[in-house]
Amino acid sequence: MENIVSLKNIILEFEDSERILKNISLDIKDKEFVTFLGPSGCGKTTTLRIIAGFLEPTSGDVFFDGQRINGVPPHKRNVNTVFQRYALFPHLNVYENIAFGLRVKKVPEKEIVKRVGEMLELVNLMGFEKRTVNRLSGGQQQRVAIARALVNHPKVLLLDEPLGALDLKLRKEMQIELRRIQQELELTFVYVTHDQEEALTMSDSIVVMKDGIIQQIGSPTDIYNEPVNAFVADFIGESNIVNGCMPKDCVVEFTGRRFECVDRGFSPNETVDVVIRPEDVKVIPADKAQLTGIVESVVFKGVHYEMIVDGVDHKWVIHSTKAEPVGAMIGMTFDPFDIHIMKKTEEE
Ligand SMILES: Nc1ncnc2c1ncn2[C@@H]1O[C@H](COP(=O)(O)OP(=O)(O)OP(=O)(O)O)[C@@H](O)[C@H]1O
Ligand SMILES: [Mg+2]
Image 1: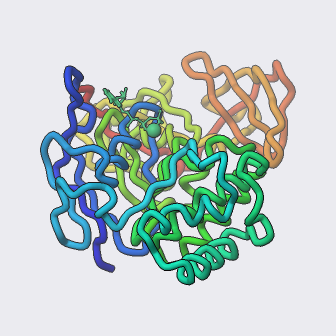
Image 2: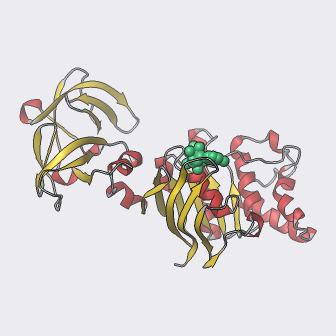
Image 3: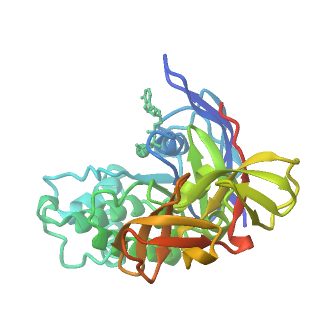
């Protein structure tokens, strides 16, 4: 697959501000659903605005279809954006909101009728043409915003937290809708969210960011199963992260005990982050375990119970289909391949 958008060594500093993007390089493939994922303030929107052309990088290059497009204004880029606040025209009806961009471009009326019709069908809003947008639900307004952006036939659609304002159930429905639209039209979607579950379910590829630096790029399964550092592991799914040390290959010490693991290649006694997912902590009888703790809380989460277990040095988060009584002393154990050893990230 060809790259449709490439960023090369992008640095961004706003006036009188520190560096916001610190050398971002990244390739987005044609027809791919790519998600920028990271905590608030990490630079997701800023990166999107650079791709859209609303913001010029301090240094570095932006490529579209192999051509450098630095300095090209937004309306001349084959890109459209859907913002979190959809900014629809409240006094116009659904039809005219979608048609707006085409009217500005003086597209012939016949063509407008055809293209708006296609869009209404695509986003399932047939019959809503005459409604003013302030009489639509949040989900319907979102559909209008998507239709309005797609009616121009961009090659790339940028979406900045487009579902942020919707309730959970509607959000899930729209996630499936968006994925369907992207696949049906064979477009490239660049999607921004700080919701890891959304990123995991929708994307072909996820770009995890922190403080203006890309931490990891990979498929959802890569990122979930092989996070490169403790930050990614923690951000992408709740994790237990404890300080550890590797006395030798395949042996790790944490909370004062020794465990077998499958990692090699660390220096003798190197300090490491040990990452264990809540679903990988096995509950066993306390008298059979080298690690024990007291159950502090139990919450039913729909599919599993989430227990917080005080293991003296660390409060363990455990997901299990079986609840243990609060106050009970339990034992915990791990399969060696469920213990993930990560190099300590150097703080800047
Ligand atoms: N116009 C601006 N002038 C100065 N600083 C800015 C400006 N716009 C954004 N920033 C700063 O740049 C950083 C990155 O902002 P950005 O909007 O890209 O974050 P984000 O990852 O989209 O966060 P969120 O999830 O909250 O939307 C923030 O620290 C923000 O305060
Ligand atoms: Mg943002």
